[in-house]
Length: 634
Figure 1 (spheres, rainbow, N blue to C red):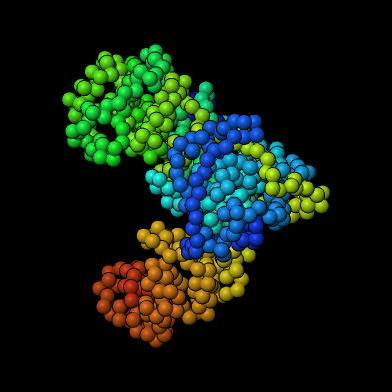
Figure 2: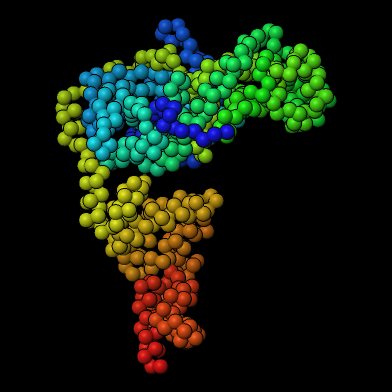
């Protein structure tokens, strides 16, 4: 295994940014786009693929159909209505969302159409109750400026967000409807040859441009990056669900390695002259061979009346496990592929005997399939209703491995790897929306958008530096934060120092979210009360973490209760003086040895006693004076 040189493989990356808009209502109804975990009703649907206007099926839709899952939807009338349930036609387009999409188009120098035509994009993975997503092409062309370099914009669309996935089980998929129908803008950038680090910078710049409009939502899930990755001579891979910039870089690096690895595997397969697999002659039922198997997976399959088939692949021995780069193998690709049919039982000859499958069983398969040493095989278990679809997919994937990188859609994982999701959609996926007439864009609307182009990121950061006296790093962090509006509000309405408020939102709260296993979200009014008390000098900034941790861990419901439980009431100056005197008297030896440098260990001793009840600055001031007085008397 070797290391990949990304510069030599012709890497091309195109970004598609999906950004939720901060509107009062959803795109085609009057429901509020609010999050809720309480659902008052539930219903189910079975979605099926239908032909396009040209009489063709979309390959991605057909793939989803083979899973035969029942979709279950949960709803709450506070965040969804009959439109989301597809029991009522869509209402008129939300004008606020329309104007925001025009503003973003103007900011990206894109060419706005005079008429916008709503379309239906077929989606039968369950994330849309209707089986399609409404989308509208608002503008084409334009560019994003990256430090003087222009990155082209392909298109800007206004569309509905999908339902929120709650659970994905073997037979069912569960969704909630509060997110369905929230306005999104989709911005597709031109594919460019660039390093993962540069693509990250492009995504960061675009995300910041969107945030300067103050018309987009923030936080995890509010912005998603789909990444189109290809290398020289390979198909385009669409990777969905990238939510973090660090994850974006890792995904591009992984896909570069995976795609080049598949090309190296393809070259090796060409030299072997792999024969085309015949479903009639090369797929054989081997259930009887495993009737007394010790393999847990095989036993479970037999007990559930599943079938066990073997697929013969001529001249394929050693190719399942051949790994040009670490973790890149055809065997791994096949395992990911069949998982989407709800099939977990798949083995290949390169990894056997293993998993409870014994050598004697392998010998019987070798004889039954008439294999020689150069041949390989796959064993697959599954229900009768699913196994044929899975076998077809395996055969197709083996054929595709001969040509290198097949075009497909993949899902990003939290580690930065990708897994198979579905085939790439085709042109048959899109057709006109018949319930909504074309939408006119007036000259006045475009003029209004041009008059409201937001200030640049750098201009806004300079204003934050001047107004709130933060350092540059903190100014960037807080403006990048989902809590910037709260920071601005409490910096202007309380006497709490802005640096304390900014640090709470960018450091204290995120650290506690990582620390606690199931943190409860901090409400805006909690922060407001804390900053108000600090501004009135009724609470010390050192108490912030203690108070917030009690609330986020569920041990307190309010700031007042948290203060009471942790005994964080401010101590008097006299009490603080007495505590400092006591600590000094207990540590004369340290002062004698270290002189004024003794303030550091003594400060730690005092803060253990008064943490959250007195400010560190005041403790430092008292200790300095008392230590100096002691040294002067010696």
